[in-house]
Image (cartoon, rainbow, N blue to C red; front, side, top):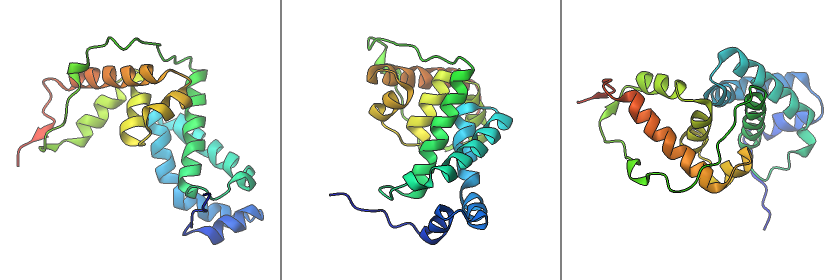
Amino acid sequence: MNTLYKNIHQEIIDQCREGSQKAQFQLYKLYYKSMYSVSLRIINDEMEAEDVMQEAFLSAFNKMDTYKGEVSFGAWLKRIVVNRSLDCLKKRKVHFEELNERTDQTADYQMSTKEVDMNVLKSAIQDLPDGYRVVLSLYLIEGYDHEEISQILDISNSSSRTQLLRAKNKLKELLKGKEIFSYN
C-alpha cells in the first residue's frame, strides 16, 4: 500500500513545483536551520556545511517533480543534504574502513540518567575522525539504522556497526577526565 504523506506545507511545496521563488524562499526559511545542522554534523566545517546546504536546496528545487510525497518533505530534503554532505567528504578522500566483526563489543555503553554538558559532548564528537563521526551522527542523531547507513556509505552492515562501536569507544576516550556530567 503506497500512501502519500500529508505535508503541513503542501501549498508551499506545490508553489515551488510551479517555480515560485517566493515559495522557494519560504521553504528555505522553514528548513535551513535543521538542514544546516545535519550537514554540519557530517562535514564538521561551518563554511562547507553552509555551501553543501545551499547546493542541496538548489538540487531539491530543481528536482521537486521527483518528490512523490511518500515521506515527509523534510525527510526527502534531509536525504539530499546527507548525500551532498557525504559527497563533500568523499572529495576530501574520507574513507570508511572495512572492518571485521571481531571488534570488542563489550565497550558498548549506555549513558546514565545524569545531566550531560552538551557543549563538551558536541566538541568531543567534532574531534572524532570523519569516518567515526559520520556513522555516529547518522545512527544516533539522524536515526538511520545500520542497513541504511551501509547503503548510504557503500560499506557493509558489519562495517557500519564496527565504525559505530569504535566511534563510541573513541568518544568515551575523548571524554575521559572531562566533567561532562552534572549531578542534580
